[in-house]
Length: 294
Image (cartoon, rainbow, N blue to C red):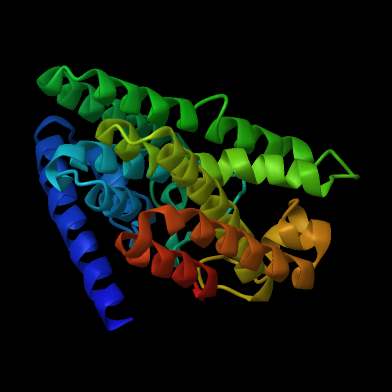
């Protein structure tokens, strides 16, 4: 665990340093409250799971972290924009995010929407700039994969189903899994598979990394639902989501949710066997995400 924490903190430090450089460049072009709103949510204390995943997988596959850093930053920007919009009254109507006032509670709904829009577009600006430098077909495919995972057939599809679920009294476990696959797991795929594309892994390795991503994403969302039900300082009210939304707990109950989260985690870890000892960090990361308390 000591080595795991050392590696985790090292990857986070590398990412934070690069993110701060990006913010400095953005500050030269974007002024006033818009920049403040963008920076507020980007620096609000996230776990940085997605960029850490991309950097860790890249190391396993022999890639240079510097080469994939624009993608790591882009994925985190997309994730942050989605959180800003998720918290809005028209969506999840949350006042808190990571124990702090949600973006719209500080800057107002209009500017929060624009800050989210700006972060999403900045993500694509960063990817296109790197693509112009590399002119690499695999890099283009990786960027396209991220866009697809974040788009109308990925994360946004999951968010739309999340909204629709409130009008579906007989919401099934299959529909729940479809929602979680798109809303959460697709962006975990976007944090793993781009490295596989750029590294030109074998079909078998790509399939296993896809299995790992999907199961880790499902485990992560199920664990989030459990944390909400049992109490979590990052939400405004204990059990709020389970009361007003379709979650793992509201659909199948707390005990079955815990079993399912463990099953997904076991599946994610099993998918990494093909990489042997090189995947130890990823295995421990999956276990940590299951056992976390926030």
